[in-house]
Length: 56
Image 1 (tube, rainbow, N blue to C red):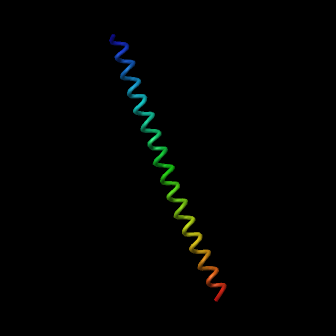
Image 2: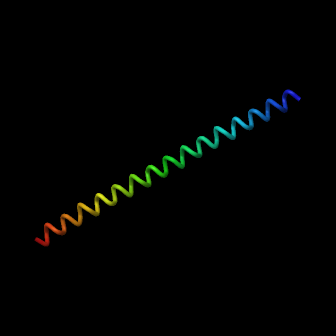
Image 3: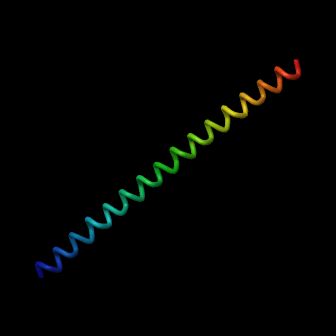
């Protein structure tokens, strides 16, 4: 009985750790996506300004 309860607790702890790691991965992916979007917007803004300068 004790061993099964111990295994059950270990399984729950393992699932919690796994879920935490997955959640961290999701957060990292979201942050990198936001960062890449910001960089893309910055690059597009700089390019449009350069085009405006060339047009003038």
